[in-house]
Figure 1 (cartoon, rainbow, N blue to C red):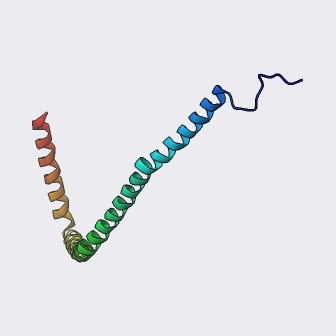
Figure 2: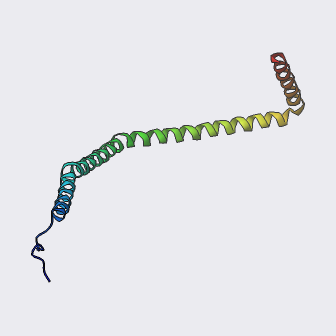
Figure 3: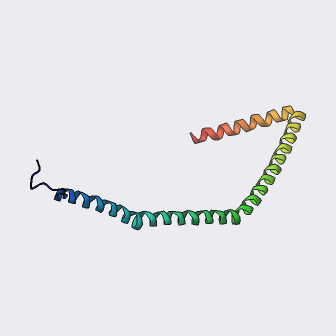
Length: 120
């Protein structure tokens, strides 16, 4: 049996729940429009600016760095050749004068040893 007080109309609590849901949806939409979308756009613009800056730096400094690398490689090769020549010359002299080389080595060791003792 139906009561005369029962109706299909939503209660005040149901209306409040629906209003809170709508408010939540509206807040999420405003948040997306006012915060998230501008933040994403700024991040995208920052990424593009970074990529442009990186591209510009590569274009401007890339050839200079390559030139510097080539010069350093050439200088390293020259230094290695010079060191190899000096090593060969020293070894040739030591082979030709073994006793003199031994005397010089002993004298150098004595001098270095006495310099080391003075500091103590």
